[in-house]
Each structure stands twice: as C-alpha cells, then as structure tokens.
Length: 472
Image 1: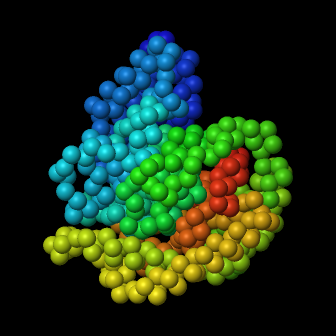
Image 2 (image 1 turned 90 degrees about the vertical axis):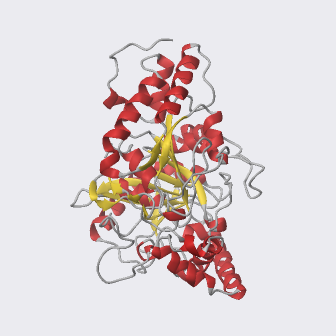
Image 3 (image 1 turned 135 degrees about the horizontal axis):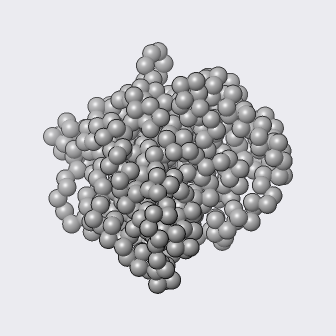
C-alpha cells in the first residue's frame, strides 16, 4: 500500500473523523504519517491562540506514525485506531513524560514509565499519541486555567473560556488538533468543555473505563472520549473500555461493541426511543433563551425522527449539597498530602474548597452518600419509563476566560452554572453532550443525553442523529 502525494490536503485531513482517516489508510489515499504531520502542524498553528496543550510529543508521534504507515502498507494494521492521532488530558498518566495535572506542586523528576489503563489501550490499538492537553489544577473546576499552564481559550472566541476541566482536550478536537481525545469527568468535566467548544463528549457509566491511579474525587470521576461525532465516541469507547487489574471498580467489557451496536441501530435511528425532555429541571434552572430555543429545536428533531418525546422532569431537587460534600472532601484529601510550601502554590479556589472539606465530619460524608443513593434510586425508577433524558448541557454559553464563573451576581463557584451535569456523576449514569447550534455571538450550545447505568447504547443512538461538529 502506498500514499499518492498531493491527493489530500492537510486541511482536509484535520477535518476528518477517526473513521474517515482509517478508511483513507485502508484505501491508500493517504497515510498515518500524512495525517500526523497535518495534526502536528495544526497544533502549532493554534497553540499560542488557545493554549490547549501542555506539551506536544512531535518526534515520538512521528515515529509512531511511521510505524503505523508501514503496518498499513504491509496490510497488517493493529487494533481499532492504528495510525489515528489522539491527545490525552494531562491528568492521565502517559509513559515517557511527566503528568503535571496543572500544578506547580508536581515535580517533573521521576521515571514516568507507567500508562493509565485508557492510555495503555490506545497504545495497544496503534493510536498516535500527539500530546497532553491542559487541565485546571488536579481537574478541580469547570474551566481550564491553572497556576502551571495559564488560561485555555475557546476556539470560537479566544476571549471566552473553553470550559473544563477537560478544556484542552475539547478545544483541541474542535480545531482539528487530532480527531479524538481522552478526558475525565468528575462533575461535568467532559461535557462542559465539549458543549462550550461545540464537539461531542461522553461520560460513560462509572467503571466502564478503568482509572489508575484512583482520583482523589473518588467514584465521581469518570474517563471518557471527546470527538467530532457520535460514531467516533463509540469507536474510542470500545478501545478504552474493560477491566484492568489496577482498578478494582472497573467493569468487564460490554457484551457488544459500542460501534457495532451503533451501526446496527443506524437503520432505525431513534424510532421508538422513549425520551423525556426536561428543559429546566422543573423550573429549578434559569436557562438562557438562546440555549433553551436550540435545545428545544433539537428535541423536536428527535420527535420528528420517530422518538416518543414527552416533556417530563426527573423527580429530584438539586443535589448540590451532597455533591459539594464529596467534592470538597476529595479536595481536602489532595491538599492533605502536600507540604505547607506546596499548598501555598495551589490555585486559591482549590485551597478554599479544600479548607471547607477539611471541616467535614464522617457523618457529613455518610449523609452525602445516603443522598447519592437516593438520587440513584430515583433515576433508576425514572428510566424504567424513559430510555433517555434530554436536557440542556449547560444553561449558558461560554463566558469570559480566566474566571471560574460568569461576571455579575450569582454563585461564583463553578457548580453554580453547571446544574445539569454534576447530578449524573452522583448517579454514575452515562451522559453525552452533542452540539445543537450557536447563540447570537456564534458560541456553541449543547444538548445533554442521559440514560440508565450501562445504557451507553441508548445515549449513542440518540447522539448519532446529530451531524458531526464543524471545525472551530
């Protein structure tokens, strides 16, 4: 198999999904080396404007791409992603370089020889690892800025935030700096930036993707894919799912491939799918008119395609107190392991929530766990009637970069503007965001799709009717 020079321009390659790249490799139209060079050039082009990468692994990526090109030329590709460029959030270990987690408390010294389970799966499947993407310190908040790496910006307007905590990953996918990225999500950290940056993101069922080392935020934190369309989400989820001996909470692989199931569902689309549409959690959330209109139009589209859609709110009050108890306790655990000198280097917001967490009692934690179990019970009952719950991903679009919350009155912590995302980390359900339009400023709007635990198939089936995200 050989590559014909000049057949495909670099700008075309960076606009392709992972599946389209694989089809091109198979046909010999272009090679993994062509695609990787185009992606690396794109990273350099946008790096100063967006600040989405902690580091770019140029030479290792080119070496991996050359090896993949030779495998395709010999007709012997490995795995499901051979030669596809992928980026990785810098909270996940990747052998060969430090994982800094956005923190000046992390030393670059050490052997750095271990991959996180999801990164190891990428290697096994031949992916080309192009670099590590930015995160707020230890992934603690819903925007991406940190003392170590500064502010990550939105591809649609660099004066706005990319969201977080997987903001670098979402921004990278949005601009064609690799079609796939790994993110993490403890309270919306995949869905928030994917919504703000106009791409697709999926928080799988907790345990679907193994995690090591364990997150300080415990079983709130999930690993998942960010991509330009639902089929690529399914493809990457197939690669990174399954048990790993380092994570005793990990699930066995699903009985069927997510990508294969999505292909099986393609003919029917969403016909017969039972969808509950909750525009504001029963009036609990103030949603901006442009967001509400775009989400309603998207839900109407699902109904037009044959889904049974009913406006119905899930039966729960805002679980913010339980979430804050668990989240702040995790922050306190992080800080407890640091010296006083290291604590002085932390993001002030992280120090503040850690101080709150340190004042919590065992009884507080048990009460939060009881609230979490009750919320899970209510949602399990809700999904006996509905396959999917549809909501806005966020009630707003991207705001000023460098802030934790929009300027003006109202809550100044990130959880104050993410009421649709964090409840489903408490319940450990799969939840995706898909882009469904823009506001008057041209900023993306997301639709969130949630299913019962282990219900990734229903989420992806609904997400797949929406077109691939354009390049930002």
